[in-house]
Image (cartoon, rainbow, N blue to C red; front, side, top):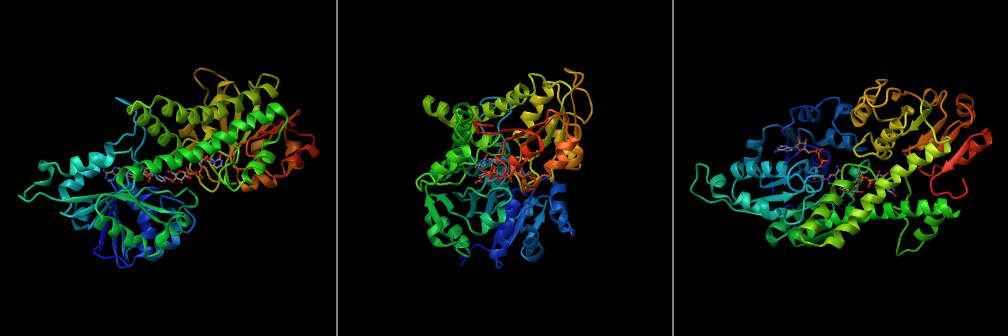
Length: 472
Ligand code: NAD
Ligand code: UGA
C-alpha cells in the first residue's frame, strides 16, 4: 500500500520504539526500518542471537524479531547514517517528568525530544516526514518545527533550506499486550497539517489496519488526545477505588457494585477493576503533564480536577497501609508481612511506579519485616525501587528490613500477614491449608486485588480483609 516511503528510521529503541517498529517491519516487508538508540547496551540486546535476552519481554515479540531482524528490521547506534537515509523518522524517545527548573515535578522533560530533533535537523534530507511517537505536551510540534527550521542547524554545509512535515501519531499500546495492541489497534491516530504527509503514514498502516480505524486530526488534537486517553483510563480506576472505600464503610461490596455499574453499556465493564492504585510508567507522568498544561493556560479548576485523580491514587495506597497496621493491633514493628506481587500489573516484570513501592516503603517505615515474592520481578529491581538493600537496616529505623523470597512457601513462613498487591493468576490457586500451617497466629490476609477464591482461606482459620468489601 505504501507510496514513497521506503526507508524509516526510529529514534529510541525502548518499550515503544522496539515493538512498534517490529510490527511495522513485519507488516511492511518492502520498507527498510532502522531503529537507533544512544544506548549501545540496549542495541546489543536487540541484536542478541538468543531471543530470550531481548531487552523487552512481550508475548509474540520474539517470533516477529526472528522473522524480520536483519531482513528489513535493523537495530543500530549509527544515528547519523540512518537519519540521512530515511524518508520518514519516528521520534520515540523517553519523556519523563521534569526533575528541576520551571515546571519541575509536573511538566515533561523534553530534552531527549529536543536532542533528537537537533540530530534530525542536521542529518536528515529535505522533505523527510517527522512523526512524533512519544507522548508529548500539546503544541510540542511547534517546538520541533522551530528547531527543524532553524537556519544554523539546517544549512550545515548547504545553501538549501530543508523542508520537513511533522505528524503526531501517539501510541496506545499497553504492556503485556503490546503486540496484540499494535497488530489490531482500536484506533490509529494521525495528526498533521499536510494531507500528503498524513496519507503517507496512513498508507503504511493500511497494510494491516482497517481504514475505518484510522482517525486523522489536527496536530494539537492528536497530541492532547493521547494525554486525555490516559487521563480517562486513570480516572476510571480512581473512581472505582474511591467507591471501594465507601463500600468498606457502608457494608456494600465493590465487586457487586462493579458488575452493576459495568453492565450499563454506556459505562462499560472494562478498566473498572478496583485495586491498590494504578502504577506504570505513564499514567502519573501524563496526568501531571496535563495538570501542568491546564495551569499554564490558567485553567485552575480543570487542573485541580485532574490532580484529584492522582491524589486519590496516592490516598488509596496510604489508606491500605493504615488498614494493615490497624488490623494488626496498631503495631507492625518486627512483624513479618509477606508481600505477594511487586510488578505494577500481572504479565509484566515492570515495576515502574508500582503501588507496591509506596506500600512497602510505608510498611517498612512502620517497622515491619517484609518478605517479597513476585514470579517475574528480580530482587535487584526491588532493591532499586525501594532504594534499600536486602536485610540492611534503615538508617532512620534500625529494625526495618526486607527479603526477597523465591517461592510463596518461603515467603509466608512465620508471617503475621499476607498482602496481595499484584493480580498474578497463581494467587488465585494458593494452597491455604499449607499457608495457614506456616503462618504465625492470628494470621491475616489482605487482598487488594479482589482475588478469586480468596474466601477459601477462611476455612483454614485465616482472617481475611478484602478491598471494597464492607463485610470482611
Ligand atoms: P524508553 O525509556 O523505554 O525508551 C526510550 C529510548 O530512547 C531509550 O532507549 C533512550 O536511550 C532513547 N533515547 C533518548 N534520547 C535519544 C537520542 N537523542 N537519540 C537516540 N536515542 C535516544 O521509553 P518508552 O517506554 O519506549 O516510551 C517512549 C515514549 O512513548 C514516552 O513518551 C512514553 O510516554 C510513550 N509511551 C510509552 C508506552 C509504554 O507502555 N511504555 C506506551 C505508549 C506511549
Ligand atoms: C497504559 C494504557 O492502558 C495504554 O493505552 C497507554 O498506551 C500506556 O499506559 C502508556 O501510555 O504508557 P499500561 O500502563 O501498560 O498502559 O497498563 P494498564 O493496563 O493501563 O494498567 C495501568 C495500571 O492500572 C496498572 O497498575 C493496573 O493494575 C491498574 N489497573 C488497570 C487497575 O487498577 N484497574 C483496572 O481496571 C485496570
